[in-house]
Length: 427
Ligand code: PMP
Image (cartoon, rainbow, N blue to C red; front, side, top):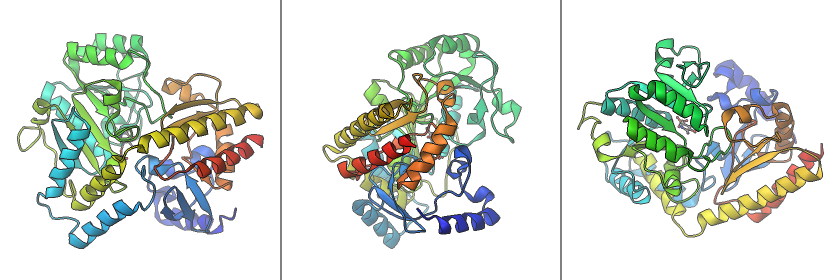
């Protein structure tokens, strides 16, 4: 496969854009370097790079593109917005329609607010939790990504009950020490941290199904325990459903798990591919937000007509019967095929899957927390990734990022993918 033009463009990009990419995860640094493939256009489950190569896309733009590229129903909604005005700075009816759709699909949302990204949504949830409880400390789970604002770029201290340390240059230690990071799926570590900090906690950030070190489901009873303790200690449960909302079914992951969070942050899928964030939750908590309450949150682009109409159109597509079952069916075929191929070639992998999303880890261990995902073999993944790209399969250049199916993938795509995987494992 020829990548000459991608390589040339990457060289040029390096001179003008920091690192040649607009988000670090797009660089090939984690897979041994090289020029990332530069995409030109997408349609359905495929996209084409600037050299004319076609790929089956399992990146789905890190989740949002659940209905594939250029879905006609969403394209029509975006075209309508382009013609009738993309931004007014006033309320529109679209916002109300979309808010009602979200509330209908996710019953824990009494009220919602739209903004522009997952980061903004989570950032505001943190502020609202602090405003509502009058406390400042936040707990989160190691390896879960909640955006790029200071309070969530915090790594664990030296033990579960210790305060966090900055996970990026530029994050003040004073901010990091407001955050406690504990391992996912570990009741003892959580309890130990709550014993020390429980009375000072404003909230806990939870990815109900972890989508940031592959796909990791909570162990039975784990999140139920977290919720019960949060209630007892008076801190809020903030579900970060930026990846998970409308990924596994028409609604949120917490509904599938039978949990009732106080606040929910969303993004990605609900924008139909356009920039979006949203948060919502219990009425008493949401009423803390300005102009009703004292917690400030605003945005020039928030609730813009283009994102609203694209989001509405996306949910209309996802609401059709059988959509999620088909992604589940194709996901199962991929799972079986990848595992069989790995076995055939003596390659050791662990595969975690939930419906149309899965992760392939190069390890013989079970992966149920970040440490285990981190301990998987990155070098082997790097080779596997590049072999797959050479066969026209695109996924995230990260050893523990999920593969995402879309409504547009077909059984023929699965077969082509399994052939490519078999080739990669044979090398
Ligand atoms: N929360 C989660 C769970 C995410 O996966 C992400 C993005 N990967 C974010 C928040 C941040 O969203 P955004 O990139 O739209 O700011």
